[in-house]
Image (tube, rainbow, N blue to C red; front, side, top):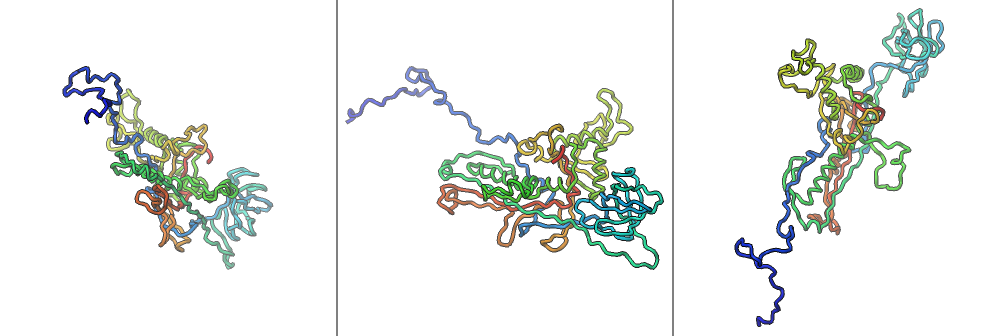
Length: 486
């Protein structure tokens, strides 16, 4: 029966038992891939290092629950009263009528019998000259001042800065007419809903290929499709922070507020940290402060605000270099090759006073100039896929942010939800939560693959959701460093 088989297929080559070059084992049509397979590195190479940009709010803030669509709080107003746009009229016989035109002022807090300081800032008269007087009449936004000096510098149409410094009454007369209520500033913010999703179909889940990875949170091991899920999670966690930094409220007539094309997307916006500081805080719009005189200006401004003793300056790399160069220049080191020792007026840094014969460290973590300033690099401002990729040239970088000064510690505010005063960090996140629903950070799996059994979808979908906003308390104590206007 053996003869029933045909002679094909036959052997094209006859392998030799030993490594002997014979005509029967010579490969004439050699293909590289037939003999060798490419080497494959199973470990993923981390060419960008740690790619996440979050951690800023974890360093300077806190997270607190809330159960409302809106967060409201009140911040203390200033104790003393000052108006910077008071126009003088009817100046005669040692008196003048002032009309207050300061923005946002609906009624005057100046009362009859109070003594005031009036300095000319513009208009008629010599700018910088001043008079002191006593209020003898007041109605609405106007008040009449009788000056103590016989020579009156204030003239008709003079625009003056006026502040109250005391009062004076005659013997046996009635007391002060009227009283002043505490002047609070009320602020609010609304949480926004952030979402993301990762999906993989069931067929791809059946073809498992493993890659050894080291993740940004320190975990190591072998992952396949869950690697992409893990990166989606890391990306979402970054967005939880960057949204709190960059968010802006939607204006009434904006495209986001009025659009009707897609009713599933949000149209409210929120007040992020940059927006709050830009509108209610201090803005250094000249790039980076590079000299002590620049920092003296910053200190002088902080003196007029909360005067917080310790502050942290989050900077991009160039801003960090500028601070290092400024402080290193104070050490008075001689030029290279000139020999000698530190100059008589040099500053001293470190254990060895940065002696020229010792290793010189030009990286500084902080300094004191009126207040304590601690410097730290902010990865978000350096990352080329975020703000680090924006134009950093002073000539054409209007609005480019280089750093943010954040006061350390906490402040006391009246929380309208709690109905009482509460200590809060200057920066903190409020997330939506109740006994039945916690929306701080939700994640769940849907579909019919990967262990899920919630629908007939032949895939696994990993969903992410959070509802939150950031509260910037005492924005007047923050400083935003940038080029030009916002």
